[in-house]
Each structure stands twice: as C-alpha cells, then as structure tokens.
Image (cartoon, rainbow, N blue to C red):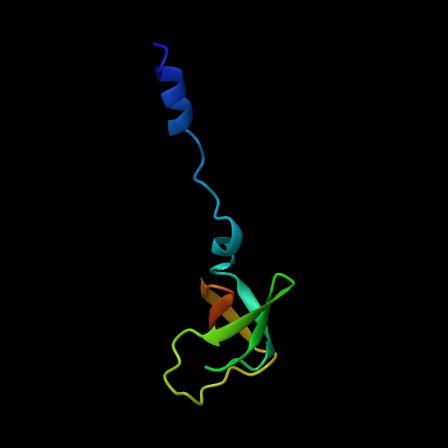
Length: 85
C-alpha cells in the first residue's frame, strides 16, 4: 500500500517531450545558403545550422537559397534536410 501511489504516479505521467537537437527533427527550415553535399546553411527557429541534403543521389544536387526544407535528422552540428514539395 506504500508503493502503489508512487507506481500510479509514474504510470500516469505524460510522454516525455524531446529536448535539445532531438526537438529540431521534423521542423521546417529556410535555406540561407545553397545546400549541397559539400556545404550549405539553413535557419531553424531563428538559429543558423550547417546543412546537407539527406539523400544526395547526385553529387551536383543543390537545394537553392530561399527554399523551404524539412529537417530529417541532426548529425553532430549538421542538419540533414529534404526539400518540401
């Protein structure tokens, strides 16, 4: 009878919210400098991040500045992005 209230409290907690860079995955971003397999930057929630295309099929593939992209993952300090359609 002493343990039951503690267990029930833990069972009824809301799911944990993602924190830090995990919270950026799924957000939209604006391309600041052209994003290619070699360089590029995007603005995510007012912060500028280095970026690369998530699946560069062509080494010459470029996402132009001004495009809107989705953040699919964060690797280190680089956002992996995909253009929105």
